[in-house]
Image (tube, rainbow, N blue to C red; front, side, top):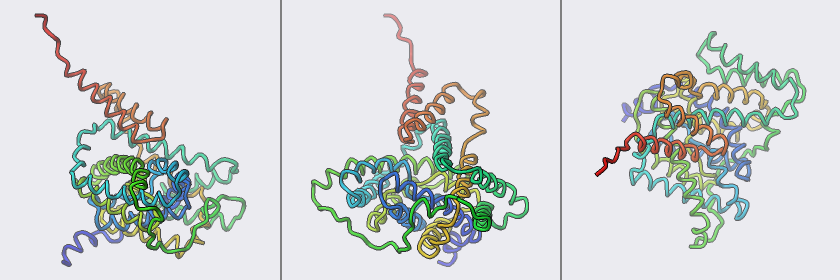
Length: 390
């Protein structure tokens, strides 16, 4: 028992804890932003992220892959919240969890083996572009001071490791920029300006809906969409983290875990979520490898909001933007782009079209669908046989 605990949880304690805590710096603005997209209170996204991170640290298959509230899923919730209210969103989240658990039981994860590598690269590059574009809105109406803080954050992130790698550089950068802005003063948009953070622990909440067939018919289309988008994003992210860490993990177990996590999220006033590429890359880049990094991120996010919400509210958005720009650079597959001349033209077209459709529609699932469709057309074209005249 002790040996198993050490092998699964305690083999990389220091790096896992620091990496998980650092990843929460990206989870805070993302959880808030995705809540706004869905049209709900910011704490709905925060509670969803906390529930998913903690639950998946025990039930997920891919250690160090972080799951939380996601923008791609939030856009699917907007009309449900607008037309029926947030309580129906909680009910839809419960059903999403059940559907994803069934996906794992039915071993639907194996389908991801048929997604070509060019589509995966297009998916990742599109996400990097979308994250970059999403940061630009924060510069509206700001002074040169904000740009200076962003540059200073990036400088510390890339220069600090030359001094020491004992503490993750993004954590140092955000702390330093927060202290600097407090010391110098001046108008600067902070986390607290973006949304009020309620210092309240998540509690059991039964969705206030009529538990009948009519409610099921209302939420089922949304839950199906959420389950499918979550399936694609989670398993594509799992492929990426498997590749980065040189390991292979069970897709069926991960989908079951995602289902359990979303089911729990729905009972605690959270929205549906899935694996996040950006936060997962931060976690693994900083040394996160075990389940403890997932747990540290979840518990860290909860404590930051509940116990240190006033401190978090003082963090300048410019510092967090700097962290996210670093993430954009790190997850974009530059090597693949530079090597495109040596690859088949069809691979380049598939990658570019996957990324382009994802960015234009701001829907990663649509981009993946287009990329897979083009790949199938290419396969059919290559497999064609001339019909001999009789």
